[in-house]
Amino acid sequence: MQYPIGKKQAEYTAPNGVTSIGNYAFLDCPVLEKIVLPNGLTTIGDTLL
Image (cartoon, rainbow, N blue to C red; front, side, top):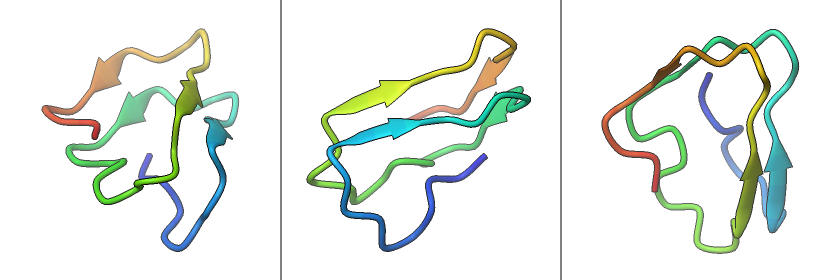
């Protein structure tokens, strides 16, 4: 999963079914304050923010 480019929301909920978040998935998202992760998540990349 990679955060959608251009989103300007302060909160993001990853969709159900996401099992992996890529490296730097949330890089350069200065307005993002909260990330809600799904229960089935098994892998998170090196750097999220």
